[in-house]
Figure 1: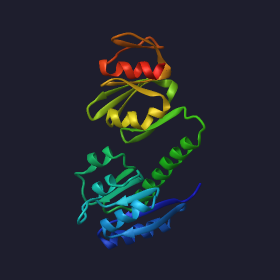
Figure 2 (figure 1 turned 45 degrees about the horizontal axis):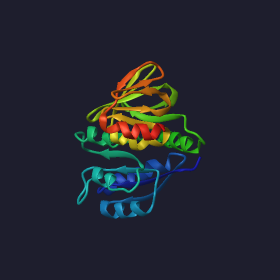
Figure 3 (figure 1 turned 90 degrees about the vertical axis):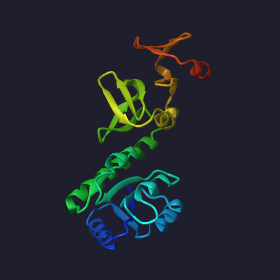
Figure 4 (figure 1 turned 30 degrees about the horizontal axis):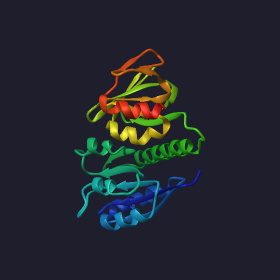
Length: 232
């Protein structure tokens, strides 16, 4: 497996020095660049894809959260900051870890190893000729669920519930994001609050979709034509 490529951004140089020191002690990491200027870092990252960014949050001109949002791709991210109040907002961005300064080497090493695991999962999924599972974060833990085990996905504003045959998972995400992320695997929207796998649909009528396991779910009027076109 190739080294984990990293860029670190922090307006405090001693913090960058510590990250450099830590990364030198962790096998399989490649710290490509460090930046004190977040705008300079943003310009670099827009032109150079990396596996992981390690970001401070409170920085001049642009904070770490906005920097991450402005990237044209989605690298793994670890926030390393003095602030604690941004943790919930950070995890909405699917970050690997949220570390509060000062951070000892062992805590940092565990966070880097977690990023390596995430990347390995991602790469292995991309290499499959046919993906038969999905990966998602629930309660700060990455979960792997086989498509055959997925019953439906239900939206509740900022959260979604993914129901399987064995348990249900609460995911901090919007339905639109889930739909965009996994639509190539056969997920289809049947209602403003429901997504199902097309392969699990048994039949449908004017008001409901019937799954092969016997479950009956509502069919929204605005989704009826798209469902018909998709299945035909």
